[in-house]
Amino acid sequence: MNLTLPMAPGARVLITRPGQRVAETVHSLSDQGAQVTVVRLEETDELTLAVLDDLTGRRLATVVEDALSAEFDVVLRDPLTSLVSSPRAHGTHDRGRVTLVGGGPGSVDLLTVGGLRAIRDADVLVCDRLAPLSVLAEAGPDVEVIHVGKIPRGAFTPQESINALLVEHALAGRHVVRLKGGDSYVFGRGGEEWNACVANGIPVDVIPGVTSAVAVPALAGIPLTHRGMTQGFVVVSGHVGPQDERNEADWSALGRSGLTIVVLMGVAALAEIAETLIEHGMDPSTPAACIADGAMPSQRSARATLGDIADVAAARDLTPPAITVIGSVVSALED
Image (cartoon, rainbow, N blue to C red):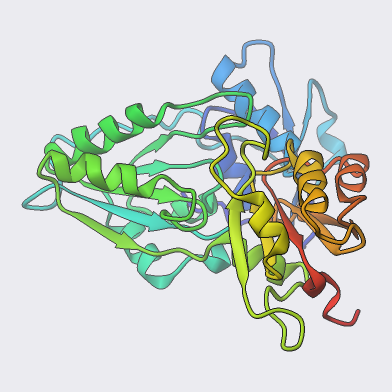
């Protein structure tokens, strides 16, 4: 559904009666530069409330319990609230298949042409919360859209359930497009989805995406490599801290590597990560940056030394999704 509206950037838009697909509406409006406010009603269901909380946390929308329509430039009832996706009786293809599409870090501008083609061809779209959801306006009118977001410490769709969805719809003869944020194979669990499909005899295609590990630092003015500063970079998950028994990374080696360190999913463990790197020889004055909601209208960041970055990021309320870059390249570019 196309939500292009005749409005200037910065227009204030009020959405009433939000539904479970309200994130698509908000993304479409945010991409046009709108400042979005959503009215939360008493009868709003729990799943929609979880989506609204996530949009608020990511600074993509303001959620209120009441609002005066006269204060807004555009007022619309969420057009996706009553839109019920129904599975096609059969797919438009001779054989069901799955395409894993990396959607990039969030902005529709960073989706690949191949990814767009797959979305337009899909019978079923299985979407992550960090995917460029406004691109769903390009999908066919009969496409079934299934949101399987994993909100940190919130609504969560188990990976096993996602795998089962892909298999179920592909076995029914449909072209299933799994639209993910970033790249499917960079902390995207795309490999697990590939294996689940292949185990059931389902053909799988992969369309790589622009990984946030590289794109978000670039959008924040940080090159991951710079002549005379570093000869490489390493991308590591910070989902669990260095002292956690589930940690598999050698943080002591990372601290001595001389490479730019890019930490994904590391907001909660950032203080522990910084402390560990310093303990293993990294200079506490090493430049560092934390960037939240990269590539989105709500992108915001903080820069500090390695020793201070956790406190500075917390003071500026930088929340997931966020990426931390550690290394001299953080200050490589002139303002």
